[in-house]
Image 1 (cartoon, rainbow, N blue to C red):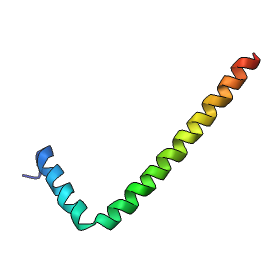
Image 2 (tube, helix red, strand yellow):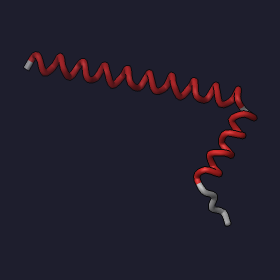
Image 3 (spheres, one colour):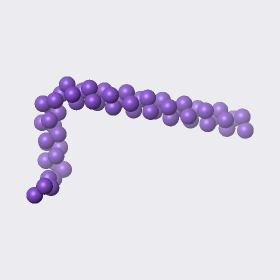
Image 4 (cartoon, rainbow, N blue to C red):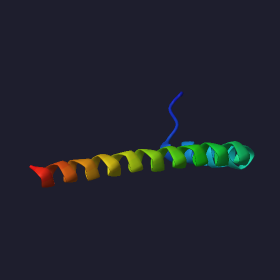
Length: 56
C-alpha cells in the first residue's frame, strides 16, 4: 500500500489541523511573517534596482 490518494492526505491534514490547531496557528503565523519579511526584502531589492537604473 503506502500510497494514499491526495484527497485522503487532505482529510488527514484537516483532522490533524483540528487536533493541533494551536501548533498550526503558530506555524502559519511564523510562515506568514517569514513570507512578509521575504517580500519586503524583494521589494527593497526592486527599489534599489529601480534607483540604480534611474542613475544609469
